[in-house]
Image: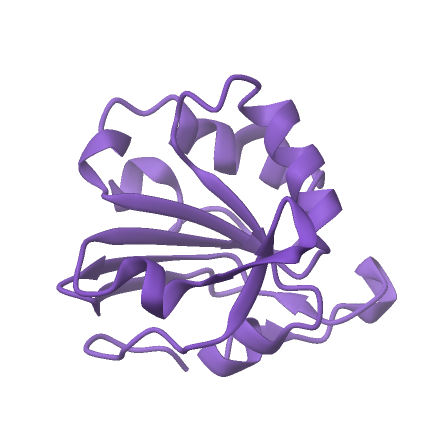
Length: 154
């Protein structure tokens, strides 16, 4: 499982459409970032509190580059981003991990097919500094919202 001191895996994610690739290892480089993993775009906890609390937090601006990742396709993530942050004023980027490769590389996948149609990502927040993992908050039950909440991470 992803741990303090790890590097971000060099795996292509998608943004906006399936042809627009983003590699977080390259995108973050040696900088500061926050990666928020969610089980599913448009799900109640993700849409009602988890991501909105990050969007409205005054501390978000100090997090560096911020990415929300889900095992969803780029179109779904783009549409979800537009519903949560219409004018993109938060600076959060919504990325699709359609095949779950990034999620598996971090070892945060859980079997969710009966509930969500396919395996999904545990809910997490990873703080990056100097291009390395500084802290990791992974929900102990995979989908709850305690340790990865904005008020705990920012």
